[in-house]
Amino acid sequence: MATALMTAPTEISWVDRLRAEGPDGQAAVADLHALLLKAARFEVGRRAAELSHVRGGDEEDLAQQAADDALIAVLGKLDQFRGESRFTTWAYKFALLEAAVKVRRRAWQGREVPLEDEAWRALSDAGASAGRPAEDAELFAALREEVERLGPRQRQVLIAVALNGVPIDVLAERLGSTRGALYKSLHDARRKLREALAERGFRIETGGEEE
Amino acid sequence: MDRDEILGKALGPGAPELTCEQCFEELDRYVELKLAGAAADERVPGMRAHLGGCPACAEDFNSLWDLVTREGD
Image (cartoon, rainbow over all chains, first blue to last red; front, side):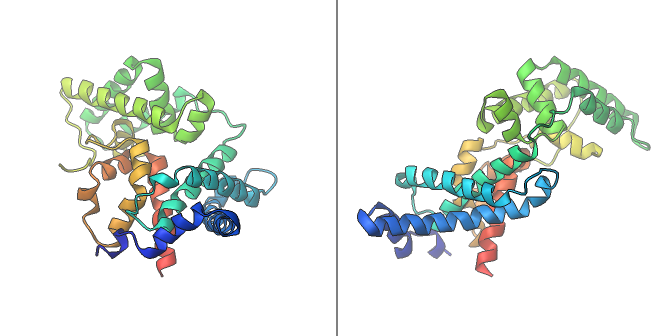
C-alpha cells in the first residue's frame, strides 16, 4: 500500500535530471514539457464542449499555453516536491489547473456575469416548489433575507459562484482577485448564513463531512 | 436546481475544510492515497468537505483522478 507513496528511484531521477546542467537537464525539461502537454490536452479535450461557442477552434493553443505555464510553475516549485506522490501525479496537477483555468476564462470571454435577479428567481422557485411544506417557503424567504444582509463582496461571490454558477476563476479574473481569496469570502458568507438561519430556528443539513 | 442542491450551494458543506491553496497542495497525495485504497479522508482531513464546497477544486480533483486512473488501466 505504501509503495506508491514513497519516493521511488524514478521520482528522484526526475528531480535530479531536471536539476542537471547542460544537455541532460535540457532533455529532462523537454520530457517534462511533453508530460505536461499530455495532461493539458487531456483537460482541454474533456472541456471542449465549453468552448463550442467560441470562434477559432484554438484548443491546441490553449493546451500549449497551459503546458508552458505549468512548466514554469513546476520548475519554480521543484524544491517543494516532497515525494509523497509520484512525480508525474504532482506535475500533472499544475498542467490540469492551468488548462482548466484557461478554458473557463476563454469560455466566459465577453459573457456577462448573471445578475442577482436570476439567483432570487432560483430561490423563489425552490421555495415555491409544488408539494413542498410551507416551512420550505419560509426557509428560502429567510435565506434570501440573510443573503441580502451580507456585505457586498460576500454577497457578490455567493450569488455569482454558488447560485449562478460563475466559475470562481472567471470571477477572480474580473475582480482582480484569486480563487483562494474569493473562496474565503464564499466560506465566510456560508458560515454567516448557517449561523443566521440557525438563530432563526431553521435546522439545515446539507451532507457535510462527518466528524 | 432543486431544493437540496440550492441549499448545498448556498450553505456549503458546513464542516471544517481546507482552503483552495491547501487543497491544491494536497491534491496529488490525496488522489494517490485513494488509489492505494488508504484512508485518504482521514489522512487529509478537510479535503472531502472542501471538494464538496468548491466546484473548481472538485473539478481539479476529478481531472487528476481521471488522468491518473486512465494511465493505470
